Image 1 (cartoon, rainbow, N blue to C red):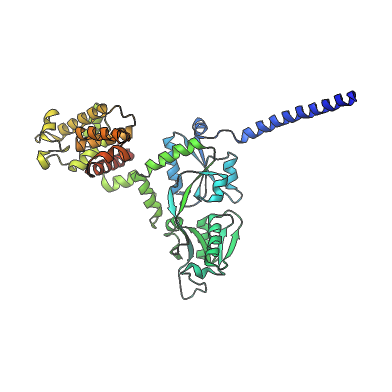
Image 2 (cartoon, one colour; image 1 turned 135 degrees about the vertical axis):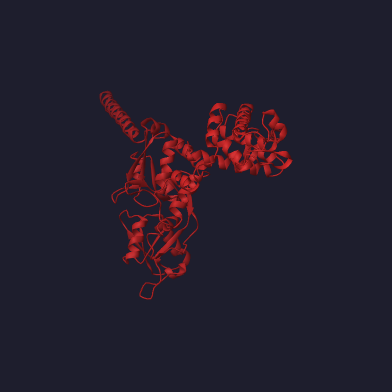
Length: 450
């Protein structure tokens, strides 16, 4: 009996040992696929690999130039984190979310709608656009045998071609329930872009399809026989797909995008791709220079003095534009004078008057901004410090000091402007000044006008 017991124990021990080794092997194998591919590893390999679809809104080439709204957006982000943007194109054999989960790419850019089902499998950045879905159909004509749809209720028994498992497929299913009538959803089993579906409608191969409105608008110039006026639902979030564990990438991208959406360049991109006109190959910089030329006659004075006194010349230019529209002999309320609109007492402090030359006025302004930058050195965040400097320039350092004390008394952060110290300033004029000048500063800064 004891002999059999020993044999059983040995056999069990062998299987336990084998199972442990096999389990370790499994853990090791699994770790290959779940290795941390977050922001740090992206910066280490110096590549941001993104899966794009071939379309006007995602990625395409125009006379050899790489373009696409999503491409241009991510190109700017890649510059921000100092890596190369690597483009991978979705094909009919690509299983998008598997490519992401298996670490074959870092992000998915194909006008991806954020849905509940998708969020169960992958993560998403903050949305870069919000848009409803629209019905694509040919414009009405006497020769057409296809009904022109004016109301979603008229979609009963209509054949609508969309890609299976797409957000369009889900919307039509919900819409069928909402109108209480069947809609014939014709599944397209291979990967086909919304643009290709639109082309099929214009050719008469499909009667109807569904796309996001921003895609329809981006292609409005190219498909002149199509109509996209019928909206089929509420605005939905369009974002970039990422892995669920890419927390640092999401945090960095979301913060960057939040700031970038305030830049004129973002508005330029939206206007270029979503205005319904032909997409221009001109860069933002060339567009600006073609339209406006240089910022002012005093650009070289801004740049020389900015270097000398360690201030940003774009900030100096933004203040002067707001104060005087670059008019050196302007006399304002209370005797404020010149480019910087210094009050006489401030002018005496910095050695300038209404009779001073533009170069002398600009140098005085640069000295003041340099002094103010050092004065608010306890505010470590540079964006916040600039806003405090602007608030002090417009309202005076005394008012700003009082507002910061009130912020502390009310449990607010004395080193944050929006929703904190700004709330403690009387009236809206100073807040509006900061917003206006800071926006102009970003405008000049993004131009990289050197």
